[in-house]
Amino acid sequence: MNKNANIESSVESYMHDLGSRARAASQVIANADGQTKSRALNAIATALLDSEATLAKQNKKDMEAGQASNLSDALLDRLALTPARIESMANGLRQIALLPEAIGELSDMKYQPSGLQIGKMRVPIGVIGIIYESRPNVTADAAALCLKAGNATILRGGSEAINSNVAIASCIQQGLDAASLPADAVQFVETTDRAAVLALIQMQEFIDVVIPRGGKGLVQRISEDARVPVIKHLEGLCHIYIDEFADIDMAISVALNSKTYRYGICGAMETLLVSREIAANVLPALHQKLIEKGVEVRVCEKTKSVLPNALDAAEEDWATEYLAPVLSVRTVDNMQAAMDHIAKYGSGHTDAIITDNLSNARQFTRQVDSSSVMVNASTCFADGFEYGLGAEIGISTDRLHVRGPVGVEGLTTQKYVVFGEGTTR
Image 1: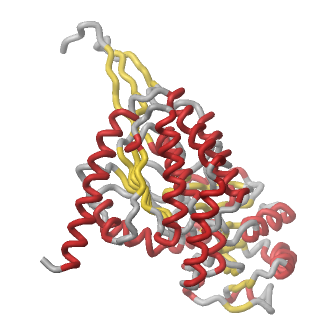
Image 2: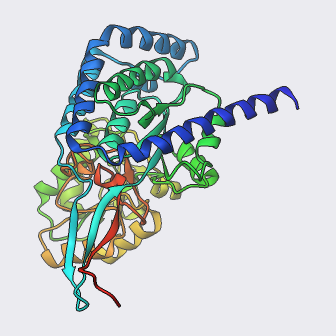
Image 3: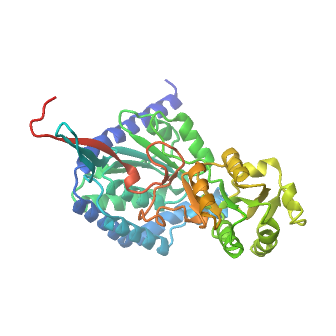
């Protein structure tokens, strides 16, 4: 056996050990009561605040390594653990601890003609693998959400944040110990060998679902190679359609916010669709405001007659998630044309209509097949916290298991429970 084969075998053995321990811990954490889990979450928050100096020291190592390897300013910003971000992590943990307990919740209890009472009980999924890049705060967020939902988890962060993540994982272990919960309920993959990722996403006997958080390339690789279910979204190619019944001031305000609130989030609008009947009334004023914000606007031929100074859009613009101050604009004949465009180019993430016509709003929400469909609201609201979930582990554009922002409930499943009184068939 050559050296590389030995390394791969060693990594596979290491991951197998993590998976085995996670599966055992999942049986304990699934039966932990809400008070115990909340105690662990609050203890982790305290440990993070008490370890601020250690976290800063370890993060400095990652920052220096990132600068030496020429990480972009945007990635370095995501990597940084400032005192404010450490405090935010702690506050997030405390907020998750305050969320209502979902595990054991009974719903849809009904009596059947047989005399049986049948309903559903919310239960944990089991063991969740989470793979992510850059942001060390995800280590705390993901661990907290999985713990609240009664799941064991194996976390694999990016190599660029290894020192920060190991330090945060140590705080998580302290919190679990303080609440007398098994340390194996949250495990962090401490090797940066990429073979660990492949092993994690193919351990069907130990991992129930994998959640990748990162760029399109990462999510695509995980989806292609995984042998376990994956909760994912590849892109956030979000649209707004302004129909002929829209309030012009509202349309300008919502569209501007959807594009410029934050360019790098998956809920940012990337393509604006406008009814030809209102284009001349709404686009010039909106275009001026976008220019003032530094947004480059690329338009179709029809829109060019209204915005002659805008750049020409190419075919690839309609299928591009810019994550940057760039917006493509298309003028369409009617709402059906707008929905056809979304069906062809959209990513199933978030799409919105601006209209005062209730019939159009209802048809749009019924026909557009996205994880979030909005009426007269900014697409940037596609977020777990904004939806009242308390927090999110990501946004799913899949159709099965969970869709849209994934909070605590999205990290659970349901089983049927049946009550009888000696009932026989």
